[in-house]
Every structure is written in C-alpha cells, then in structure tokens.
Image 1: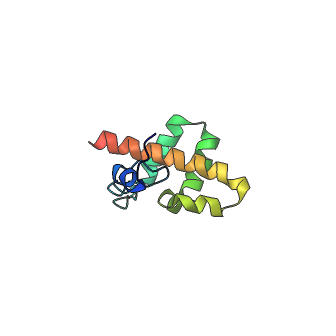
Image 2: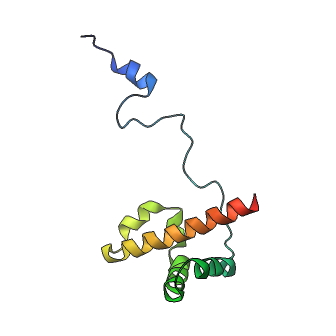
Image 3: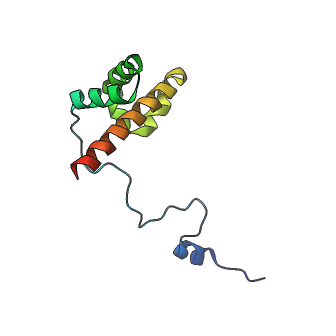
Length: 102
C-alpha cells in the first residue's frame, strides 16, 4: 500500500471539502435592474393569479436574498419555503430575460 502525501492531494484538488482555489466565484457580477411589470406578466403567464400576485409581492420584499442566499437561514422557519419559491420564480424570470435578450 502506497502512502501519498497530503500536499500531493492538495495540489491535485482531491481533498474532500477543499475548495478549488482557481474556481470562479459564484458571486453575482452585476446588479440587475428588474422590469417589474414584465416580471408580473411572466408570473401571470406561468401561475394561477392569486399565487402569481403573492410571488410578485414577496419578490420585491425578498429581492436582496437573491444575492445573499445565506440570509434565508436568518428568516423565520415558517417563511423559508415561501422565500425559496419566490427566489426560484425570480431566478427563472431573470434567466428567461437573459436568454431572450441574447
């Protein structure tokens, strides 16, 4: 059995839980300006009216958590699922507008 030095694992990036130091950051590169009316229409085209309105209202409230996902843990446990649903819908819209503008 051959024993390898941990430094060789580190150089190869094979340590479990070791971040890749050359990996690109997942931080947002730019602040997005959201067209709220277009977003509202997007929600109405995807969801039932009452749910779309709830998503729309909460999207404006929790927009800052889109850039700081760790902040979700600081919210009430009963609200976390709704916040995640709101951020998911907002992310889908932002991805949709990014693709259609390309």
